[in-house]
Image (cartoon, rainbow over all chains, first blue to last red; front, side, top):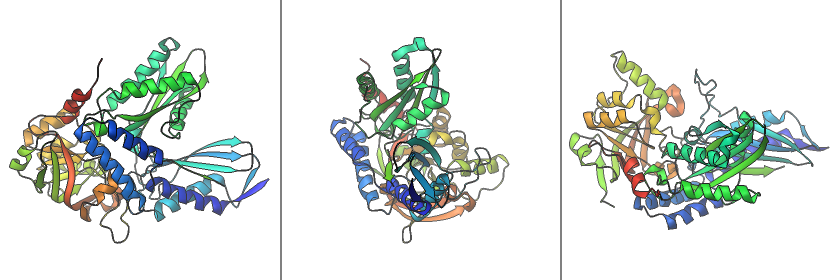
Length: 280
Length: 186
């Protein structure tokens, strides 16, 4: 067994909370620059320029990329030969969030109860998805998720008869109805298969992929590109004010499903497609 | 692109009428911030015929919940939040004297009607350009509902705050017009 100290996890989690919110990934910056070259709308061009400049300002570490520094969503791979010493893993991640969001001057956006709506004041609790994997490493990824784009997400329990066309229509219709609300240009996460809860998780997980990373199955890689092309014909454009750049990418993740079902989910990510990983 | 319109707050009818959907504007002067929780409180007071903690007359309401300010900074990052969530409240706020709002995403038909009726303008700021926008905010002070944290009502002093006229007092809507212009149907 390899021992990993509780306090080391706290410190590393705090670091990635901060870096995710101040440093936009190169993949996203490059995608924004490429879209800028292809954008025909003058307003759209101006908005893409502002977003590129925004990422440059944010990198200095004074102002986060977006004031909505998100719900702290974690995907954690725990090597089965790892032992956490000094406390529980979930507590360490939670303490890291509290430290990162305080030290990093990040917004505290979580209310303790959906109806009573009192702020927890430290952005806890985080949402933690764990997976046990071979080896003796602990790999932690944070994907801070903003509320505006999360609100434009949806699960649909389609019929097997709806087939690929049913899935594609559901995704395009969802993006179309979302318009400018989720801060386009967006990244569209799509889950297909599994169960009601698994499909939403797949859509979320797909957003961890870098822009331009395709599904390894050529069938779904083609579906991603087809959806991207169709979405960018909708005309929604940057911020919904009209243009060619509605989405930067579409990611599809698939899982086996029941003979009676065809679950589908769309999880929309704004252009601040943030994620950072640390391995201990 | 049309020339940039300079707006100085608080606004009067003439300034609002000058704004047409698609125009670029730069805002200078005081603006109030309020989002979901503060709007509910304000509209509850209006329904009960009670006095508001702020004077809305001529003012723009910016839908924002900024991140905390670092020492020496007026504010943290401060981009717009999604406006449709304020659809149930916006007509009441306009009726109470406000001349418009700043946010992101399309607002509903009831808001368009209220903008025409009360002569208001809905300005879109660039969602996610929060660090860039923060640079145009020179001062920030909480003036009501401090207990709401990021959702408290602040008065901001802004200088050349960049926005685009999204829905105007003449009934135009850039979200519809812009999209139609760039949609490829074939």
